[in-house]
Image (cartoon, rainbow, N blue to C red):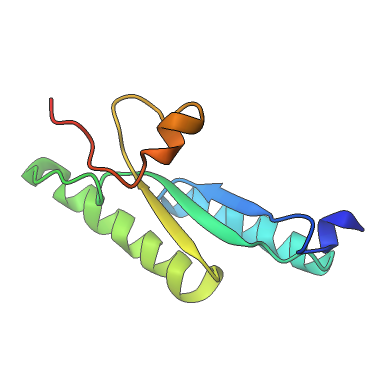
Length: 106
C-alpha cells in the first residue's frame, strides 16, 4: 500500500535515450499504473544531446536521442529530467548535486 501512496513513496523511472530502453520503461510504467502506482518522474540518463558536443559524427545519434526525449516528455512522463553524458558517472550526494552544473571540459 505504501508504494501506492505518493505522499510516502515517489517512483522514478530511469532510462537511456534509446528506443528499446524507453519502450521497456514505458511497459514498466503501464504495469505500475495497473497496480495504481503512478511514477513521479522519468530520468533520461547519459544523453549526448545535452552534453554540449558538436561532433558531426554524433549528429545522427543525437537526433535519435532527441526523438526519444520528446517521446518521454510529451506522452509518458509528468516530469522529465535529462542527465547529460559524463565521462565519470555521478556517484554520491555531492556528485548528484552537481548535475545542474556544466561538465568540466577535457
